[in-house]
Image (cartoon, rainbow, N blue to C red; front, side, top):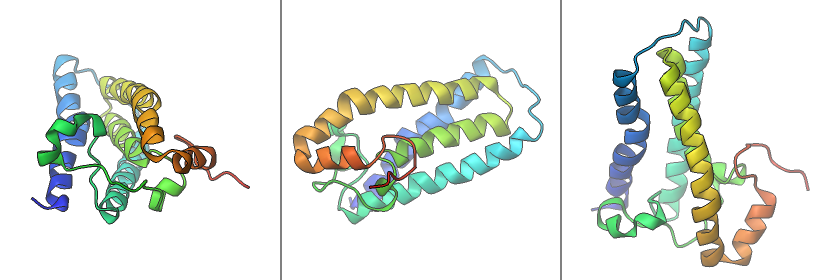
Length: 168
């Protein structure tokens, strides 16, 4: 299987579960709508922004001959591929260390707003909290061990979440 196909499989299985399967399941368990009016338009914008962030980030991984496969799922590399050997710092990764996670959260949040489902909005917030802990306690220590000084410099110059470039 090519790296592109493995990335597509990863996208369908992992973000697809977070953004589609789980919200459908949650809304079946607790279906309550809240009239959000014009905020629904914000939901559409967030979905478009989330799609852009996610797929642009995927291209950065493909350019480095890797997939966005989460390194601790190494046993699944025949299906999802492998993380790039080189630290991905190009594209959106110049502005935030986690544009892919941001994209998934924005997709979920936008979905909750468009469909006016508080449970999906709560799910998006929960996802952000989980992603934060995964990044802070698992991914960042792994990348520090793997890339050393290069990653340390990247940490100093690129924010974890907020897409604002620091001035030097």
